[in-house]
Length: 190
Image 1 (cartoon, rainbow, N blue to C red):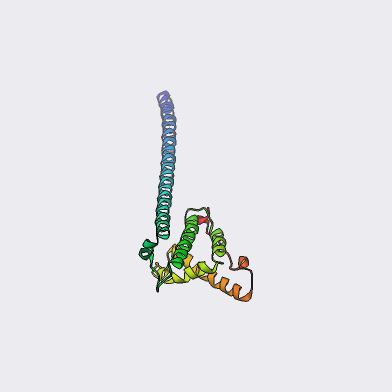
Image 2: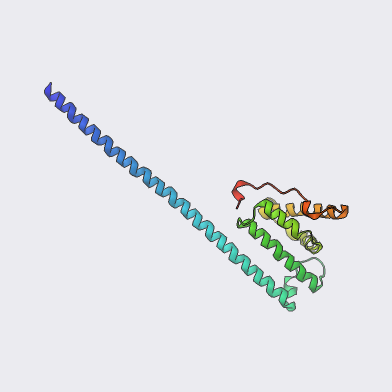
C-alpha cells in the first residue's frame, strides 16, 4: 500500500506538471492567435491606406488633366463628350462643374464627408443653374454606370436632389431646405 500511495503522489505531481505545462502552451497559443489577428488587422489597414492614397493620386491626375484642357482651348475638343456642339465657355464650365462634383464624391469615398454631409454639399453646389445644366448634359454618361454601383446610386441621389431643387425654384422655396438627407450607413461614416 505504501508503494501505491507514493505512486499516487507521483502521479498527482506529474498531473499537476502536465496541467501547468498545458496551461502555458494554451497561453502561448492564445497570445499567438491574438498576434495573428492583430497582424491581419494591420495588413487590412495598410491596404486600405494604399487604396486611398492611390485614389487620391488618381484624382489629382484627373484634376491636372482637366485643368490643362480648360487652360488650353486647343485641347477642349479632346474633352468634348457631350451631345451636340457646345461653346468652349460652356464646355469649360461643364469641366469645372465635373471637378466640383468629383471633389465632393472623393471626399465621401475617403471618409471626409458622411453621406448626409455629401448630400448637403451637393445641395449647395447644385443650386447653381450651371451645375444643373452640366448634370443634364452628362445624363448619358451616367446611363452607362453599373446600376447598383456606388456612383450610380449617388447619381440617383443627385437626380432626386436636382428635381427637388427645380421644384423649389419654381415654387419660390429656399434651396437650403430642399431634399431629405440620406441616412449614413455605419461602415461609410468618416
